[in-house]
Image 1 (cartoon, rainbow, N blue to C red):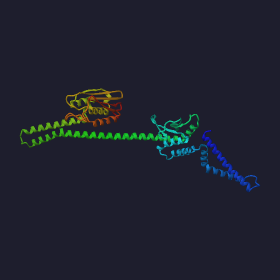
Image 2 (image 1 turned 90 degrees about the vertical axis):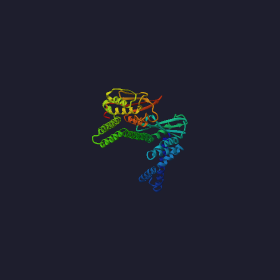
Image 3 (image 1 turned 45 degrees about the horizontal axis):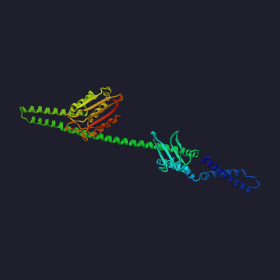
Image 4 (image 1 turned 180 degrees about the vertical axis):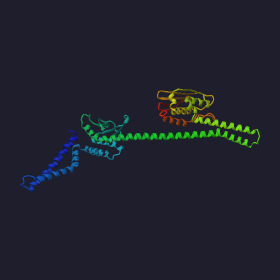
Length: 422
Protein backbone atom coordinates (compact mmCIF):
# COMPACT_ATOMS: atom_id res chain seq x y z
CA UNK A 1 0.00 0.00 0.00
CA UNK A 2 1.42 3.47 -0.89
CA UNK A 3 2.65 5.54 2.02
CA UNK A 4 -0.08 8.15 1.64
CA UNK A 5 -2.83 5.55 1.97
CA UNK A 6 -1.19 4.01 5.00
CA UNK A 7 -0.92 7.40 6.64
CA UNK A 8 -4.61 8.06 5.92
CA UNK A 9 -5.67 4.66 7.25
CA UNK A 10 -3.66 5.12 10.45
CA UNK A 11 -5.08 8.62 10.91
CA UNK A 12 -8.63 7.26 10.66
CA UNK A 13 -7.75 4.55 13.18
CA UNK A 14 -6.39 7.12 15.62
CA UNK A 15 -9.51 9.24 15.31
CA UNK A 16 -11.72 6.18 15.78
CA UNK A 17 -9.75 5.23 18.89
CA UNK A 18 -10.10 8.75 20.27
CA UNK A 19 -13.86 8.76 19.66
CA UNK A 20 -14.19 5.29 21.18
CA UNK A 21 -12.31 6.37 24.27
CA UNK A 22 -14.53 9.43 24.74
CA UNK A 23 -17.75 7.43 24.35
CA UNK A 24 -16.42 4.73 26.71
CA UNK A 25 -15.66 7.37 29.31
CA UNK A 26 -19.17 8.82 28.88
CA UNK A 27 -20.70 5.37 29.28
CA UNK A 28 -18.78 4.69 32.50
CA UNK A 29 -19.75 8.09 33.88
CA UNK A 30 -23.44 7.54 33.01
CA UNK A 31 -23.52 4.12 34.74
CA UNK A 32 -22.08 5.62 37.89
CA UNK A 33 -24.41 8.61 37.96
CA UNK A 34 -27.60 6.84 36.77
CA UNK A 35 -27.09 3.13 37.49
CA UNK A 36 -30.77 2.35 36.92
CA UNK A 37 -30.96 4.07 33.51
CA UNK A 38 -29.46 1.07 31.66
CA UNK A 39 -27.51 3.31 29.23
CA UNK A 40 -26.56 6.87 28.39
CA UNK A 41 -29.29 9.46 28.24
CA UNK A 42 -29.81 11.10 24.86
CA UNK A 43 -28.49 14.44 26.00
CA UNK A 44 -25.25 12.73 27.18
CA UNK A 45 -24.84 11.18 23.72
CA UNK A 46 -25.30 14.58 22.08
CA UNK A 47 -22.81 16.23 24.42
CA UNK A 48 -20.33 13.42 23.88
CA UNK A 49 -20.57 13.82 20.09
CA UNK A 50 -19.88 17.53 20.48
CA UNK A 51 -16.85 16.76 22.63
CA UNK A 52 -15.56 14.30 20.00
CA UNK A 53 -15.98 16.89 17.23
CA UNK A 54 -14.12 19.48 19.28
CA UNK A 55 -11.32 17.01 19.94
CA UNK A 56 -11.07 16.16 16.25
CA UNK A 57 -10.77 19.86 15.40
CA UNK A 58 -8.21 20.55 18.10
CA UNK A 59 -6.02 17.48 17.59
CA UNK A 60 -6.27 17.09 13.80
CA UNK A 61 -2.80 18.44 13.03
CA UNK A 62 -1.18 16.59 15.92
CA UNK A 63 -2.81 13.27 14.92
CA UNK A 64 -1.73 13.79 11.30
CA UNK A 65 1.88 14.39 12.34
CA UNK A 66 1.76 11.34 14.62
CA UNK A 67 0.44 9.14 11.80
CA UNK A 68 3.15 10.35 9.42
CA UNK A 69 5.83 9.82 12.05
CA UNK A 70 4.66 6.25 12.67
CA UNK A 71 4.40 5.32 8.97
CA UNK A 72 7.20 7.39 7.42
CA UNK A 73 9.69 7.62 10.25
CA UNK A 74 12.44 10.08 9.34
CA UNK A 75 10.78 10.91 6.05
CA UNK A 76 7.95 12.57 7.95
CA UNK A 77 10.16 15.65 8.32
CA UNK A 78 10.37 15.84 4.53
CA UNK A 79 6.61 15.81 4.15
CA UNK A 80 6.23 18.55 6.74
CA UNK A 81 8.93 20.60 5.05
CA UNK A 82 7.30 19.95 1.67
CA UNK A 83 3.94 21.26 2.83
CA UNK A 84 5.60 24.25 4.44
CA UNK A 85 7.51 24.96 1.23
CA UNK A 86 4.38 24.80 -0.91
CA UNK A 87 2.61 27.20 1.45
CA UNK A 88 5.56 29.60 1.28
CA UNK A 89 5.75 29.31 -2.51
CA UNK A 90 2.18 30.57 -2.72
CA UNK A 91 2.82 33.48 -0.33
CA UNK A 92 6.20 35.09 0.26
CA UNK A 93 9.05 32.79 -0.91
CA UNK A 94 11.46 34.74 -3.19
CA UNK A 95 11.43 33.48 -6.77
CA UNK A 96 15.16 32.75 -6.79
CA UNK A 97 14.71 30.39 -3.82
CA UNK A 98 11.87 28.31 -5.28
CA UNK A 99 13.89 25.84 -7.36
CA UNK A 100 16.67 25.25 -4.79
CA UNK A 101 14.10 24.72 -2.02
CA UNK A 102 11.94 22.44 -4.16
CA UNK A 103 14.93 20.34 -5.22
CA UNK A 104 16.08 19.97 -1.60
CA UNK A 105 12.61 19.09 -0.31
CA UNK A 106 12.24 16.48 -3.07
CA UNK A 107 15.51 14.85 -2.12
CA UNK A 108 14.79 14.83 1.60
CA UNK A 109 11.22 13.61 1.19
CA UNK A 110 12.21 10.65 -0.98
CA UNK A 111 15.46 10.07 0.91
CA UNK A 112 17.52 10.01 -2.31
CA UNK A 113 21.09 11.11 -2.94
CA UNK A 114 20.24 13.35 -5.88
CA UNK A 115 17.18 15.28 -7.05
CA UNK A 116 16.72 17.82 -9.82
CA UNK A 117 14.05 20.35 -10.73
CA UNK A 118 13.83 21.67 -14.29
CA UNK A 119 11.75 24.56 -15.65
CA UNK A 120 11.07 24.79 -19.37
CA UNK A 121 11.72 28.19 -20.89
CA UNK A 122 10.92 29.64 -24.30
CA UNK A 123 13.11 28.61 -27.21
CA UNK A 124 13.73 25.10 -25.91
CA UNK A 125 15.90 26.33 -23.04
CA UNK A 126 15.69 24.95 -19.50
CA UNK A 127 16.50 26.24 -16.04
CA UNK A 128 17.52 23.51 -13.62
CA UNK A 129 18.54 23.12 -9.99
CA UNK A 130 20.25 20.03 -8.55
CA UNK A 131 20.34 18.98 -4.91
CA UNK A 132 22.92 18.62 -3.50
CA UNK A 133 24.80 21.19 -5.58
CA UNK A 134 26.89 19.67 -8.37
CA UNK A 135 25.70 16.14 -7.54
CA UNK A 136 26.14 13.71 -10.42
CA UNK A 137 23.68 11.06 -11.67
CA UNK A 138 23.18 8.25 -9.16
CA UNK A 139 20.86 5.25 -9.46
CA UNK A 140 17.76 5.04 -11.61
CA UNK A 141 15.98 8.34 -12.37
CA UNK A 142 12.26 8.77 -11.72
CA UNK A 143 10.83 11.74 -13.62
CA UNK A 144 7.41 13.37 -13.25
CA UNK A 145 6.13 16.25 -15.38
CA UNK A 146 4.90 19.39 -13.65
CA UNK A 147 1.89 21.04 -15.26
CA UNK A 148 0.00 24.27 -14.71
CA UNK A 149 -3.22 25.27 -16.49
CA UNK A 150 -2.80 22.33 -18.86
CA UNK A 151 0.71 23.37 -19.91
CA UNK A 152 3.86 21.45 -18.99
CA UNK A 153 6.07 23.93 -17.14
CA UNK A 154 8.86 21.59 -16.03
CA UNK A 155 9.94 18.31 -14.47
CA UNK A 156 10.93 16.91 -11.10
CA UNK A 157 13.49 14.10 -11.07
CA UNK A 158 14.77 11.87 -8.28
CA UNK A 159 17.53 9.26 -8.55
CA UNK A 160 16.48 6.17 -6.56
CA UNK A 161 18.95 3.49 -5.55
CA UNK A 162 16.91 0.60 -6.95
CA UNK A 163 15.32 0.14 -10.40
CA UNK A 164 12.25 2.31 -10.79
CA UNK A 165 9.86 -0.59 -11.03
CA UNK A 166 7.51 0.49 -8.22
CA UNK A 167 5.09 3.38 -8.20
CA UNK A 168 5.97 4.63 -4.71
CA UNK A 169 8.51 7.28 -5.81
CA UNK A 170 6.33 8.31 -8.74
CA UNK A 171 3.34 8.79 -6.44
CA UNK A 172 5.39 10.85 -4.01
CA UNK A 173 6.74 13.03 -6.81
CA UNK A 174 3.24 13.59 -8.18
CA UNK A 175 2.12 14.76 -4.77
CA UNK A 176 4.83 17.43 -4.89
CA UNK A 177 4.35 18.21 -8.58
CA UNK A 178 0.68 19.15 -8.23
CA UNK A 179 1.00 22.26 -6.04
CA UNK A 180 4.50 23.03 -7.41
CA UNK A 181 3.07 23.81 -10.86
CA UNK A 182 2.03 27.35 -9.93
CA UNK A 183 5.40 28.12 -8.35
CA UNK A 184 7.38 26.77 -11.32
CA UNK A 185 5.14 28.66 -13.73
CA UNK A 186 5.88 31.82 -11.75
CA UNK A 187 9.61 31.07 -11.98
CA UNK A 188 9.36 30.63 -15.75
CA UNK A 189 7.41 33.86 -16.17
CA UNK A 190 9.86 35.75 -13.96
CA UNK A 191 12.90 34.47 -15.87
CA UNK A 192 11.34 35.45 -19.20
CA UNK A 193 10.47 38.90 -17.85
CA UNK A 194 14.02 39.33 -16.58
CA UNK A 195 15.38 38.28 -19.99
CA UNK A 196 13.13 40.76 -21.79
CA UNK A 197 14.01 43.49 -19.32
CA UNK A 198 17.72 42.86 -19.95
CA UNK A 199 17.11 42.97 -23.71
CA UNK A 200 15.27 46.28 -23.34
CA UNK A 201 18.12 47.67 -21.25
CA UNK A 202 20.64 46.65 -23.92
CA UNK A 203 18.44 48.20 -26.61
CA UNK A 204 18.13 51.43 -24.61
CA UNK A 205 21.92 51.50 -24.19
CA UNK A 206 22.38 50.99 -27.94
CA UNK A 207 19.89 53.74 -28.72
CA UNK A 208 21.65 56.09 -26.31
CA UNK A 209 25.03 55.26 -27.88
CA UNK A 210 23.56 55.75 -31.35
CA UNK A 211 22.15 59.16 -30.40
CA UNK A 212 25.51 60.11 -28.96
CA UNK A 213 27.31 59.07 -32.15
CA UNK A 214 24.81 60.95 -34.31
CA UNK A 215 25.24 64.01 -32.09
CA UNK A 216 29.02 63.86 -32.40
CA UNK A 217 28.81 63.55 -36.17
CA UNK A 218 26.41 66.48 -36.35
CA UNK A 219 28.80 68.57 -34.29
CA UNK A 220 31.72 67.53 -36.50
CA UNK A 221 29.81 68.32 -39.68
CA UNK A 222 28.64 71.66 -38.28
CA UNK A 223 32.20 72.55 -37.30
CA UNK A 224 33.44 71.46 -40.72
CA UNK A 225 30.83 73.53 -42.56
CA UNK A 226 31.53 76.54 -40.32
CA UNK A 227 35.27 76.23 -40.89
CA UNK A 228 34.83 75.94 -44.66
CA UNK A 229 32.54 78.97 -44.73
CA UNK A 230 35.14 80.96 -42.80
CA UNK A 231 37.93 79.66 -45.02
CA UNK A 232 36.24 79.90 -48.44
CA UNK A 233 33.25 82.27 -48.29
CA UNK A 234 34.23 84.87 -45.67
CA UNK A 235 37.54 85.84 -47.39
CA UNK A 236 35.64 86.58 -50.61
CA UNK A 237 33.13 88.76 -48.80
CA UNK A 238 35.86 90.51 -46.80
CA UNK A 239 37.77 91.21 -50.00
CA UNK A 240 34.63 92.55 -51.68
CA UNK A 241 33.95 94.80 -48.69
CA UNK A 242 37.49 96.18 -48.82
CA UNK A 243 37.26 96.82 -52.59
CA UNK A 244 33.93 98.61 -52.20
CA UNK A 245 35.41 100.79 -49.46
CA UNK A 246 38.37 101.70 -51.66
CA UNK A 247 35.99 102.52 -54.53
CA UNK A 248 33.95 104.82 -52.28
CA UNK A 249 37.12 106.63 -51.15
CA UNK A 250 38.37 107.13 -54.71
CA UNK A 251 38.12 110.68 -56.13
CA UNK A 252 35.20 111.47 -58.38
CA UNK A 253 35.93 110.58 -61.98
CA UNK A 254 38.79 108.23 -61.05
CA UNK A 255 38.65 105.24 -63.49
CA UNK A 256 39.87 102.97 -60.70
CA UNK A 257 36.49 103.20 -58.95
CA UNK A 258 34.46 101.18 -61.49
CA UNK A 259 37.29 98.68 -61.76
CA UNK A 260 37.23 98.17 -58.00
CA UNK A 261 33.44 97.67 -58.10
CA UNK A 262 33.80 95.02 -60.84
CA UNK A 263 36.46 93.20 -58.80
CA UNK A 264 34.18 93.33 -55.73
CA UNK A 265 31.34 91.88 -57.83
CA UNK A 266 33.62 89.01 -58.87
CA UNK A 267 34.56 88.33 -55.25
CA UNK A 268 30.90 88.21 -54.21
CA UNK A 269 30.14 85.84 -57.08
CA UNK A 270 33.02 83.58 -56.05
CA UNK A 271 31.73 83.56 -52.48
CA UNK A 272 28.26 82.60 -53.70
CA UNK A 273 29.74 79.76 -55.76
CA UNK A 274 31.55 78.43 -52.71
CA UNK A 275 28.34 78.68 -50.67
CA UNK A 276 26.37 76.80 -53.35
CA UNK A 277 28.99 74.05 -53.31
CA UNK A 278 28.58 73.67 -49.56
CA UNK A 279 24.78 73.59 -49.94
CA UNK A 280 25.05 70.79 -52.49
CA UNK A 281 27.01 68.72 -50.00
CA UNK A 282 24.31 69.18 -47.36
CA UNK A 283 21.61 67.96 -49.75
CA UNK A 284 22.42 67.86 -53.48
CA UNK A 285 19.63 69.19 -55.73
CA UNK A 286 20.49 66.48 -58.25
CA UNK A 287 19.32 63.83 -55.79
CA UNK A 288 15.80 65.21 -55.77
CA UNK A 289 15.74 66.12 -59.46
CA UNK A 290 17.62 63.31 -61.17
CA UNK A 291 17.92 60.52 -58.63
CA UNK A 292 20.76 58.62 -57.02
CA UNK A 293 22.89 58.03 -60.13
CA UNK A 294 22.77 61.69 -61.16
CA UNK A 295 23.65 62.85 -57.63
CA UNK A 296 26.64 60.49 -57.44
CA UNK A 297 27.85 61.61 -60.86
CA UNK A 298 27.68 65.22 -59.69
CA UNK A 299 29.62 64.31 -56.55
CA UNK A 300 32.25 62.59 -58.71
CA UNK A 301 32.69 65.68 -60.89
CA UNK A 302 33.07 67.96 -57.89
CA UNK A 303 35.42 65.61 -56.00
CA UNK A 304 37.49 64.58 -59.06
CA UNK A 305 37.60 61.00 -57.74
CA UNK A 306 37.96 58.02 -60.10
CA UNK A 307 34.67 56.17 -59.78
CA UNK A 308 33.01 53.25 -61.61
CA UNK A 309 29.30 53.64 -60.96
CA UNK A 310 26.57 51.03 -61.56
CA UNK A 311 23.05 51.92 -60.38
CA UNK A 312 19.89 50.03 -61.32
CA UNK A 313 17.30 52.31 -62.90
CA UNK A 314 14.27 51.20 -60.89
CA UNK A 315 11.24 53.49 -60.36
CA UNK A 316 10.68 52.02 -56.88
CA UNK A 317 13.93 53.60 -55.76
CA UNK A 318 12.77 57.04 -56.92
CA UNK A 319 9.40 56.51 -55.22
CA UNK A 320 11.09 56.11 -51.84
CA UNK A 321 13.08 59.35 -51.31
CA UNK A 322 13.95 58.49 -47.71
CA UNK A 323 15.73 55.28 -48.74
CA UNK A 324 17.31 57.04 -51.73
CA UNK A 325 18.69 59.79 -49.49
CA UNK A 326 19.99 57.23 -47.00
CA UNK A 327 21.77 55.37 -49.83
CA UNK A 328 23.38 58.57 -51.13
CA UNK A 329 24.90 59.61 -47.80
CA UNK A 330 25.93 56.02 -47.08
CA UNK A 331 27.84 55.82 -50.36
CA UNK A 332 29.44 59.25 -49.98
CA UNK A 333 30.56 58.40 -46.45
CA UNK A 334 31.98 55.05 -47.59
CA UNK A 335 33.98 56.52 -50.49
CA UNK A 336 37.59 57.58 -49.94
CA UNK A 337 37.69 61.27 -50.79
CA UNK A 338 41.10 61.29 -52.47
CA UNK A 339 41.51 63.68 -55.38
CA UNK A 340 43.74 63.23 -58.40
CA UNK A 341 45.18 60.03 -59.78
CA UNK A 342 44.79 56.87 -57.71
CA UNK A 343 42.94 53.59 -57.44
CA UNK A 344 39.48 53.78 -58.94
CA UNK A 345 36.61 53.06 -56.61
CA UNK A 346 33.49 51.13 -57.54
CA UNK A 347 29.90 51.66 -56.46
CA UNK A 348 27.22 49.08 -57.26
CA UNK A 349 23.54 49.53 -56.40
CA UNK A 350 21.19 46.61 -57.12
CA UNK A 351 17.44 46.82 -56.62
CA UNK A 352 15.83 43.45 -55.81
CA UNK A 353 12.30 42.32 -55.19
CA UNK A 354 12.18 43.47 -51.56
CA UNK A 355 15.48 45.22 -50.87
CA UNK A 356 18.16 47.39 -52.39
CA UNK A 357 21.79 46.29 -51.96
CA UNK A 358 24.90 48.52 -52.10
CA UNK A 359 28.57 47.66 -52.43
CA UNK A 360 31.35 50.25 -52.25
CA UNK A 361 34.92 49.13 -52.90
CA UNK A 362 37.81 51.51 -52.37
CA UNK A 363 41.22 51.89 -50.73
CA UNK A 364 41.44 51.18 -47.03
CA UNK A 365 41.61 54.42 -44.98
CA UNK A 366 44.76 55.52 -43.20
CA UNK A 367 43.95 55.77 -39.50
CA UNK A 368 40.53 57.14 -38.68
CA UNK A 369 40.45 59.61 -41.62
CA UNK A 370 40.99 59.56 -45.33
CA UNK A 371 42.07 62.99 -46.53
CA UNK A 372 44.55 64.16 -49.13
CA UNK A 373 45.57 67.72 -48.40
CA UNK A 374 42.87 70.21 -47.55
CA UNK A 375 40.37 69.21 -50.25
CA UNK A 376 37.45 66.81 -49.95
CA UNK A 377 35.51 65.57 -46.97
CA UNK A 378 36.70 63.37 -44.16
CA UNK A 379 35.27 59.81 -44.12
CA UNK A 380 35.68 59.10 -40.42
CA UNK A 381 34.89 56.00 -38.45
CA UNK A 382 32.36 58.02 -36.46
CA UNK A 383 30.64 59.06 -39.71
CA UNK A 384 30.32 55.44 -40.83
CA UNK A 385 28.97 54.54 -37.39
CA UNK A 386 26.32 57.24 -37.68
CA UNK A 387 25.42 56.02 -41.17
CA UNK A 388 25.14 52.51 -39.76
CA UNK A 389 22.69 53.82 -37.16
CA UNK A 390 20.67 55.46 -39.92
CA UNK A 391 20.58 52.26 -41.98
CA UNK A 392 19.60 50.28 -38.90
CA UNK A 393 16.69 52.67 -38.35
CA UNK A 394 15.37 51.64 -41.78
CA UNK A 395 15.65 47.96 -40.80
CA UNK A 396 18.76 47.32 -42.89
CA UNK A 397 22.36 46.41 -42.08
CA UNK A 398 25.92 47.48 -42.92
CA UNK A 399 29.09 45.36 -42.97
CA UNK A 400 32.65 46.65 -43.47
CA UNK A 401 35.58 44.39 -44.38
CA UNK A 402 39.19 45.18 -45.28
CA UNK A 403 41.56 42.99 -47.27
CA UNK A 404 44.77 43.60 -49.25
CA UNK A 405 44.55 47.35 -48.80
CA UNK A 406 40.94 47.53 -50.00
CA UNK A 407 37.86 48.35 -47.97
CA UNK A 408 34.51 46.83 -48.94
CA UNK A 409 31.34 48.36 -47.53
CA UNK A 410 28.16 46.33 -48.12
CA UNK A 411 24.69 47.39 -47.04
CA UNK A 412 21.07 46.63 -47.72
CA UNK A 413 17.80 48.39 -47.01
CA UNK A 414 14.24 47.09 -47.28
CA UNK A 415 12.29 48.50 -50.20
CA UNK A 416 8.56 48.38 -50.71
CA UNK A 417 5.72 50.37 -52.13
CA UNK A 418 5.03 52.04 -48.79
CA UNK A 419 8.53 53.49 -48.53
CA UNK A 420 7.57 57.03 -49.39
CA UNK A 421 4.74 57.06 -46.87
CA UNK A 422 7.06 55.68 -44.17
